[in-house]
Amino acid sequence: MSKIKEEFRDDEEVKDEPGWLPGWWMGIFYFTIAFSVYFTIDYHLIRNWTQEKQFAEEYKSAPAAVEETITLKADGSNPFRGNNAAVSEGEKMFRTMCSACHKPDGTGLIGPNLMDKEWLHGASDKEIYSLILTGVPQDKMKQKKSPIGGPPSPMPPKGGAPISDTKILKIMAWLAEKNSSLIPAK
Ligand code: HEC
Image (cartoon, rainbow, N blue to C red):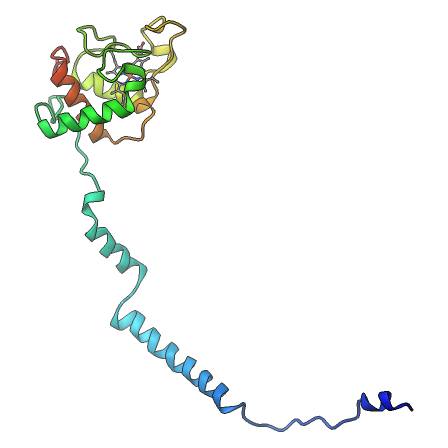
């Protein structure tokens, strides 16, 4: 038998005595057990650090992010009529979200002029509110061709903008301020 083979002989005695792991290792082990007990008590009983509680706290501290939902008055008119803050907010929103089709001053491009006395789908707050909510699909369009030439193109719901019903009423408050032929109710 050569010398190399001798070194790898598999007949050495395996030490299989019961014993303890090194002190530092057992220290960490006991610490994790103690910590899990402490953490469970702290999490559930002392701090009550649950998702439900965190959500409730966050919800309470962020009321500004939740807009109050306002809708038409009982007679069908817009509650923001004559409200100066709503009118100027509405004007800004109209410029960003509706002006591509109605022109920044509302006098019309692809969509009709909103500043004249002619209303294709009714002239009351209630009718205009539901028109803006649903848009005007192709088959409901009254314009047979686009005012700037070419085929008529429909109006998407809310003009295609992700705006709340309350914001629509603010835009309408601006429309009513500029165009008195938009009437509160029939
Ligand atoms: C993609 C283009 C487009 C956008 C964006 C758009 N509209 Fe329109 N809008 C139209 C068209 C087209 C019509 C007319 C449909 C028809 O012929 O009946 C219309 C009709 C209207 C009418 C009715 C006019 C009337 O004489 O009866 C109102 C009010 C109106 N839009 C408001 C808005 C508001 C407010 C916004 C923004 C939130 C908006 N639109 C965004 C295309 C648009």
